[in-house]
Length: 426
Image (cartoon, rainbow, N blue to C red; front, side, top):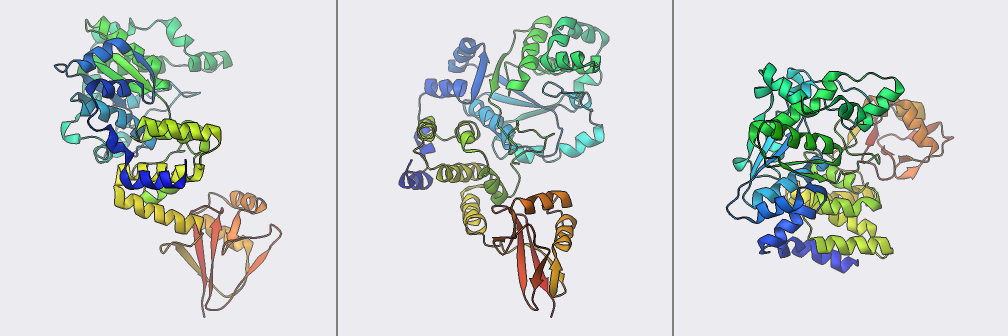
């Protein structure tokens, strides 16, 4: 994809071509874009095409952190597709289930959250939802409202929906049992508690990542046990984080939707080239024709991956922060990262002029939280990743010169925003 095409895209916004599509086209895209599985696909498609049907579409979120990442934002975009077709979005804050902890994708037991931690985490959720969804039409509920007073009769009916063989046969549980690690009944009970949410809100559809498939199927089983028609469910692709693993709040490998625009932009520029297609498909609403063309050119080796990432980063920042913010973030990236200019706002420390030891500088970087540890900085130095005024220092360097009435800027990594300005007194 040549630069002219990319510039044209940025200026005109190819997303406009999606407006005015027939209902059938919009439904087909909803059922396929970024989607791994739909059960039951034909049933759901028929209901979506019925203009008199308003579906209750469920998403459950256990508040394990106070911030939502762009992987979660991709799910919100899928909810927005339902919302734009006139369906009712119901987000369940799992303040009850979070006290148990979902171990669906975890190698070990997960510590439950306290009510105080949960209350702190959910304070800004609605503001973050509003970046994608029309929150005036959003139904927001808390499952602690019904789980805290659940009856013995209900508990017995729930437990009848899962066998011991099913629970112990789940991949992560089976591995733990094989290792001799314990698996509590509390953990095994989690899928049934979240499935009961589907009963309480009368869900027609539930969304989740591929790591939630078992939980989603339990929603169907539990609804049947309570005399309700089983919900359809949709699993979506998971976004990969900056460390190459699934983006996860607990891992902290995330691009946060409420980060500053320039931070989001720079982080998005760091993703692997191979992830550009899935980010375009799931985390934006680029027309799929554009996504397919970009994907084809990437596979053929004819695409400019850097320019494509710029288009991607601009679009995602625009989605959450607006076009002006995206434009400013792009300029920030060009000046601060590509041209390696220091931003106006930068941490600084003053030292006496003279020879400054590298050990002193390492200590300052850790003290200012620009580096996690002295060991990590030393490793970076050995990899020629410690820059002073844009030049990587030799790993054997012990001291650097700081003249009177002067300064230098340390940068950890050639494209990093972790910078510290060292100034001298007179």
